Image (cartoon, rainbow, N blue to C red; front, side):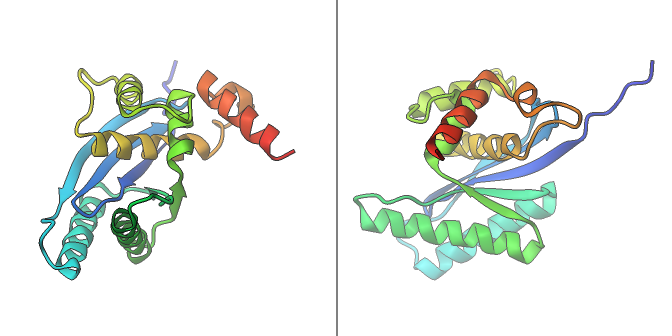
Amino acid sequence: MASSRVPSVRVLGVDPGLTRCGIGVVDVAADRSARLVHVGVIRTEAGAPIEHRLAALAAGLRDIVRVHDPAVIAVERVFAQHNRQTVMGTAQASGIALLVAGEAGLPAATHTPTEVKAAVTGYGAADKRQVQTMVARVLRLDRLPEPADAADALAIALCHAWRRGPAAGASASEALTPAQQRWADAERLARR
């Protein structure tokens, strides 16, 4: 019997931040299985001028795109925080990731932290440790991905890949994990 190759998508997940920007690249098959390609963090010096920090972030992201050739870039969507300086830096880093996607001619998507947590753990208010644990399980890693920024980037990439639809020939409910099915059910109820 000939083996059929399950088509996959390579997703670059970005957990935006100016000091630490999490990067995760995964290959995700249509059957929702996933393989780690790359994980890391792009760091910039907190005391450096903002334009230098943003340029360094852009250069690092361009290198990741050049080396790993993702099909799409998924970025955590900026949400309101009490600390205005933190949200500004996160928004700027997010904009750089979206700019790099545009420069490379890649589609880009944003996902809220709650969407990402729900997709990966089945619980939209999961803590960092729960996200790291589930990412490690899904990617069959021997240890938890660290730092948390890198684990979050992998979770963002997985969330995006899993949201792109069911495998060919499968119904939507057959292609979803139990956590994803609960998430889809909750989204459907919220739209009513």
